Length: 70
Image (cartoon, rainbow, N blue to C red; front, side, top):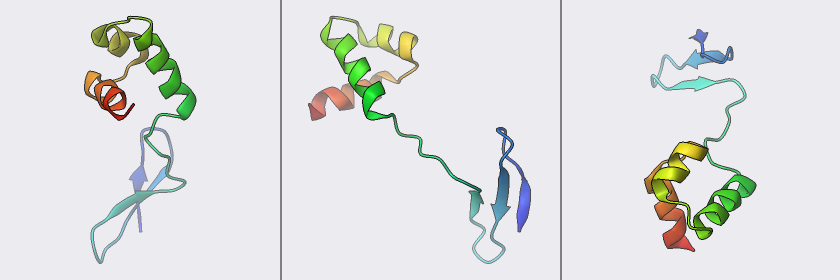
């Protein structure tokens, strides 16, 4: 059943049986490989974690996790 609109204008839906909400054409919240590589390259060039979070809008914890994976 329809359940209003999301802030970006897409339709929201609500399941009456389980109460789960969903959107039409859902998108992923993940960063693309290009964005991730750009941010890690900036870190390798001695940018601070705080500077990266200000510049790219990425959480310091996210960047730290990417560094540990690498």
